[in-house]
Length: 134
Image 1 (cartoon, rainbow, N blue to C red):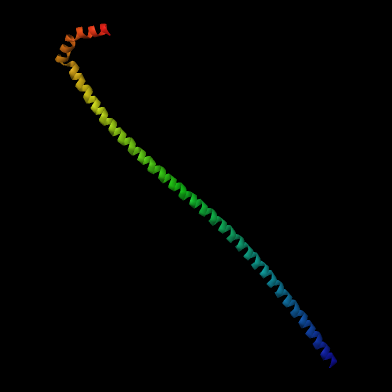
Image 2: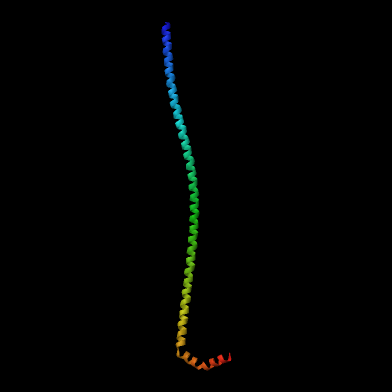
């Protein structure tokens, strides 16, 4: 019976050793999986930190773009107001020019009229006397 006990004990030790190796193998696999999960978690954390930084940069760029757009709109508004002032000045200049042309035409008609020419001829002696006196 001692042989049975010894055989049974040896079998039991062998089974236990086998089971111990199996558990160690499973433990090693579990530890590797934990390491992979930790690495994956760290990579995800790094990615989220990078994404947050990128979002911050995009927000800053967006704010700058909005400011540039406001500046451009102000510039356009001022430019259009300046164009309007120039157009008004051109219209005023055209009115003044038309008035000057009308006055010049009137003076040309006066200078070419017979009464002007006669009056000028009659006033020649007076003009000569004025030049002598002055």
